[in-house]
Image 1 (cartoon, rainbow, N blue to C red):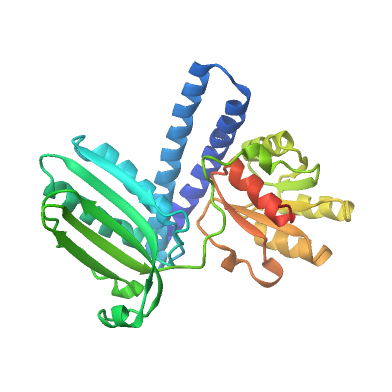
Image 2 (cartoon, helix red, strand yellow; image 1 turned 120 degrees about the vertical axis):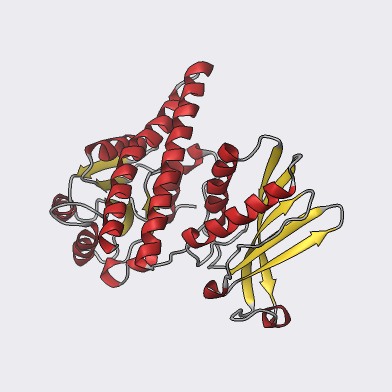
Length: 346
């Protein structure tokens, strides 16, 4: 099983390297094209790439489940994955509404553990509305006090994220929903006369979320200030499109195909390189060793780690610490925002 998990992680990393040029090239072309039809085709291309990225996340969830290494999850992404499944597999007579609070926190629970629970509740809501109705997914923060926590085994008071599934009609059962005790969470079910029912999953919240990608952000506001960036990735296509994107948004760029090249380039230009953006899985010298070598030369160097696997900044500590972790497939806005933050720009 461990070997299967390792294989799944390797496949996921490769697929994310394939998807990154598609996602970033679509964003570049969308900025350059003005005709409606080509932009419509780009939207289709980007939507397909996003669906591919969602499948990769499912592979990674499978891997994490086998390795028993739960990582933080974003309720927005969990609901997005659910939305895709519902759109493709549920009757069109059901209207789907997704409501996520703007300040909703991440959760310290593996999405692979929650998705089956949420999917079971969504199926129950579907079955409660055979004639059609509204299925609503909602995520919001909630403070659980001592009195509320005392009613459930293993639950401690504090900030929770509540993910609810509502049916506008009928009585929604929750049979088959497993306990969330292993996560320190709990499930409640409310049946409302003539107003349907709602099931709520309560799980402990993680730290307050950093800024997220939002559709209404003006990406031009994230332009660089002619800083020199060292971009390190062994995939030619990823390296090329990421460099092109950075140059299009006001940065100068040097590239390296592996960590050894990157360290040599960095050493040749003392004080000139504002930040290094490096892949983690590379031949010759991997990302962790690269970060360590760079910090030996300059302990204050700004480093952004890029990975096709799900991992957080907690994996990079001491000499391996990084200023941000970017997930593949790379999105232009996430990359530009992370760079501005690392460089101390408002």
